[in-house]
Length: 387
Ligand SMILES: C[S@@+](CC[C@H](N)C(=O)[O-])C[C@H]1O[C@@H](n2cnc3c(N)ncnc32)[C@H](O)[C@@H]1O
Image (cartoon, rainbow, N blue to C red; front, side, top):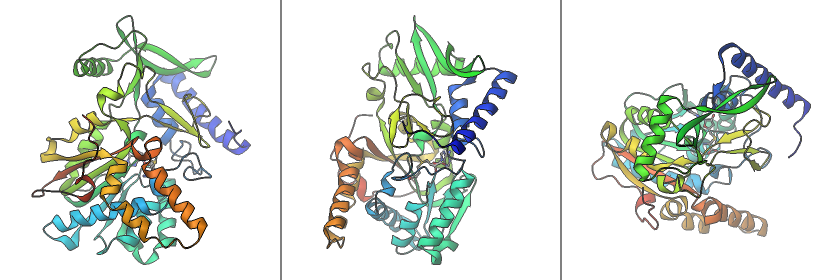
């Protein structure tokens, strides 16, 4: 693993000191409380501390960072929703967790007609600033359309989109031991952070028991995994804010039966540091991303039927993008020179190949207040996993 710089090590040490003080004062933190601080502690957490996270020089790469094909495909779906709204020229876009701002800038340049508003709901003050600079640099004439907000707006009409945000919501980790449900905490040993297992809180115990009931079998002794108790309130909040339109989520994940398969007995939690994936969440807290795969069945359960919403579709990223015109956009790119051709081909491969993002990433959509809604991405279900 590459060694962090002295400066970033100091940043991590400050976060660890804050966590240590908190644990000394009020006891061990549940894993979700630890993950929340490691990612979002103001000024010190991974997403809040001004570190370079995205792209080749960062820790990981997301689909919109690969090039503009992802944004082009998404723009077709946004414009399709706009046409289904009663007032098609006054649609808006709400992007949740906009990262470096690359998707916002690309979409603003592509969407014709332009959205009435482009709202960004972003937790990190540092990333808000990066997003503003990116949009200012790439489409200064459209910056006036963009507003950063702190909570979902009321009566939103248009498209809500979140790429790789659900996987960044803090999770609780559980372990089955002698038929008991244990919960992972972060405590201290000789004043150093240490992962510990203790009896699960009633809330987590109930959630794990529900999982076992849904799956129709008990987890084996020693089975470990995680569960995102925040997924439902998060999604419900977004769907409540949607009056008419579509909410689209893209992320890595599985339907529940695959997520909690007996073979996946150590869960899906993963950490990213300088393009290395590893399982240690205590490695330089604040300097690495911590994430878990998304239980798409939980998302469907949280969204379908609640707030007068309907599940609009669920498919792999590859199928969603191909159905949205990926091939046509690829062929239309002006790639006269060999280098551009190779870059374009690498982008398409990374977005769609099963071993890359193509099948690991999935799209799920919900609609609300539309008559017979449909969008291009969900028209052809090449592959529909069972929820
Ligand atoms: C993995 S990054 C993805 C960034 C971007 N969507 C992309 O695809 O490149 C997660 C983003 O979501 C933001 N985020 C995480 N939880 C959030 C929440 N509850 N509300 C709003 N933004 C959130 C993070 O600050 C970050 O911008």
